[in-house]
Structures are given as structure tokens and as C-alpha cells.
Image (cartoon, rainbow, N blue to C red; front, side):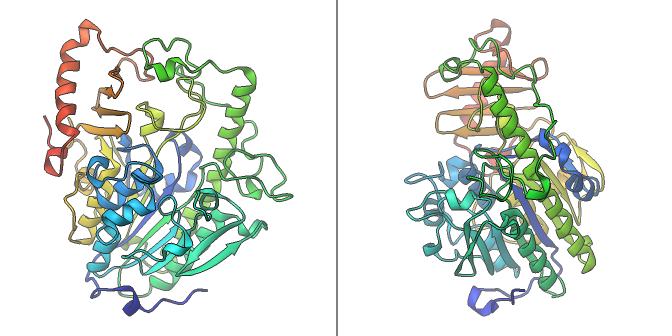
Length: 469
């Protein structure tokens, strides 16, 4: 069991008075469809709080998405434009926001903070502990830096409060379980104390997790997400979802990048199905981890005084629109992610249909903790939205990546690409995004309005990102 590091060595401010504990639990590359297997998350968080049914990410990629979480800003404002240098990765974030982000704000508000799991891409052991963190258990990248160790389910390294600790290939070394154990230990140590805490628990499942060690586990999820050995074959018979967009027959309405993708053959579909089943199996350890953390809070009498958030950094494709794997597109599978939360100020059993985005998470936590943000945030607190579903009707969100910018409304998504290509989908009539209405005369007025609004959002900051048209 770890002992508490000396707060004096971690820049702790005066103890906050009356603020709730905050735990954010984040998965990696998780779709909303897969939430059906997250029985504990749904029953212990969603059923006791709010489920945001239309939640999105501003930039569907790990490091930019996590940077949005830590700043409350859209990518064009926080400036982390990818996973790797020069425009992205841990080094880029630290240079821009290392001493001015959510963890620092919460420490300044008197919170004891901890990071457990995957931080930002290309963080490595020799880069030390960033400002804002009282305790630190971060997955460290290989040297020279790649994300191999960061994502591996076995045979990986954690930076544990400045000490490099290597984990091997035994079943007990399975990363999701190790992270859960550290989170439960943290809650058990900190919950009895008067000082509120903030814990960011970031699992690496269901991201693809490196090669299987031999002989543990004795099943083949090579090139796919890694389940715990106890969950091997749990979804061997799970059918691959095949919405109308799966292996899409006619992509003539889509950008050339999609048009150039061939349709899948039987072997390729089998590979996608195996990857999908492994992803579901890998999520079972995350779901078990959520229950263990909630049980620890309950045992310590702190469950009612803790804001718990469950979400993912981005979505993922399993063959929709001929895209075999990955993210980084405007389509729903890429940008729509789970969001459930419970805690002080969150009504029980609420389903919120208002649009929300990952830029809202930092404002929500700042609101709950009564902290002072050091940046102008582009999102808004979701606590009032959970209390009054419908107050954000008409909201419009910005989706942006290096190759396109898009606006997502309740009914439409409209995108402009660097190539000059455009896409427009009427999600009310075409929820699977099968027929772009760009250049359709019947949608000319709608497209013009969306384009005008997009051109405002793509340079927005603060209030102008939240303003309704």
C-alpha cells in the first residue's frame, strides 16, 4: 500500500472547504454502442445520475481530446493538434499549458490530486511529474518515445511518483487491474481525510493493446484490444453490429478519401469482428474497476460526496463507411462518446438529450469544486443541464481536425474539408449518414446557414463558442 506523498513537496494549497471529491474515469477508443456491456457503469453511475445521450468530442484523437478535457478548450484554442510533435503530444501540451490546466486549478482550490493510467501521448519516464499532481501513476512511453508501452496490457512501465516500475506478463500484471488497484488504494487512503480529492483514472481499454504475452492469456487478440484472462471468450458469439453504413455500398457522395476505400471481403470482416469482440471483452475489466472504486467510496462513506464521471476520449470504427478501424472522421462512430455522471447536484436517473461535448467536462468540474480556471474555457458546466434538461436546446458544436472543420447540431452535421470537399447529413432523416445533401437544392438554405455558423465557431473563444444562433 502506498503512503501519501508529502503535500508540501507537491505545491498543495490550503484545504478546500465543502467541495465534493471528483473522480473522472476515462476509457480509450470506446463507442456508445459498447456501453451495453458496461453493467456496473450503467447501474452505479447512469442510473444514479445523468446519462448524456448526445455527447461528442471536439477532436477525435487521444492527445487533442485529453487536452480539451484538461483545458476546457476547443483544439484551435488549446493548440494541441495531434499525438506527435511538433504540433501535438505531451511535450506540446506541457509547453502550452503545463502549469495552467485543470489539475493545477484544483490544487490551487485546495484539492489533493491524482493521475492514474494513460496521460498524454509520448509522456515518458524522464519527463518527471507535471505540475498539478499530488500523486502520479502514469503509463510511460518507450524510449525513443512511442506509445507502445503506454498502450500495452502487459510488459509495460508506470512512473509511480517519480519511480519507474515495470510490470511483466503475469495475469496479475494486467494493466486495467493494476490501475484499478491503485485507484482503490488511493480512495481508501484519501477518503477519510477532510481534504477533497480529484482522481483522473484513465484506462487504456479498449484501445489496441500490443502483442499477447505467451502463454498468458491463452487466446488470440493480437492486433486487437486485450481482455483480462478471466474474460477470454466472453463475447465469442457476439455478432458484429452491421448498421446500414457497415461496408457501405455506395460512397459516391463522400470525400475521395472514403471513395478510395475498397469494400471488405469476408476475411476482412472476420478481422473486424474479432477486434470488436476483443474490445467488448477488454471493457469488462474496466466495468469491474468502476464497481470496485464505487464500492470503496461507499465503504468510506464518501459516495454521496463524490462527483463521478465516466466517459471516453473518442469513438471508434468497426467497418462503418468502409472504415475498418480508427477514428478521425466526422461520422457518428468517431465523434460520439459515452458520458454518465452522478454526484452532488446531479439528479438521479436523468436522460439528457441536449448536446454536450468534452470541452464541457472541465467547466463542470470547476463548477462543482468552486475552483478558478486560469484559461477562458469554451465549454459550459453540465450540472445545470442535468438539473434542467432542455435548457441547451439549439446548441451547436464544433468538430475539428487538421483536414476538416464541422458543425454538429441536433439535426445536422456539416463539414468543410481542406480539399474543398463538403458533406452535409440530415441526421433526422438519415441517422446512418448514407447520403450527403451537400449541393442538394432542397438543402441549399440549410447549408448556407450552417456554413455561416461554422465560420464563426472555427475561431470562437469562450462565450462565442457557447452562444446559440
